[in-house]
Length: 115
Image 1 (tube, rainbow, N blue to C red):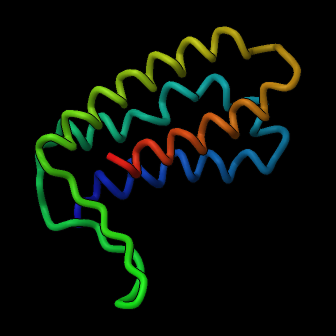
Image 2 (cartoon, helix red, strand yellow; image 1 turned 90 degrees about the vertical axis):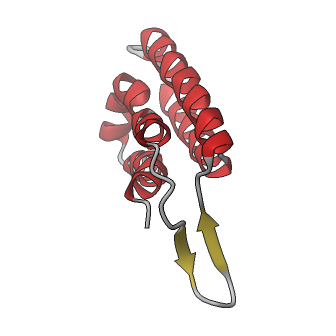
């Protein structure tokens, strides 16, 4: 199992779970640029281990990282880091930023899962 792939997918999901709390949701804009960091590390690790399998024989999700996928994941993670840094600057202190944070984390999770 490739642990970096698991961490790359679990990090934005865990942050999304934290959005349930209004207090945590108000602090999450400052952490948006850190959410894609594990995906960048997964892309840079260069380990093309056995794929990550979630589920059973009837319904299994398989996450694998090959060289082209690692390149796409790395570029996407860099873009998400820059976007998170930019969003942080504009969201801190503004009302309604929590909905954007939740949407942003859902989109990040999908993007990491695709690559």
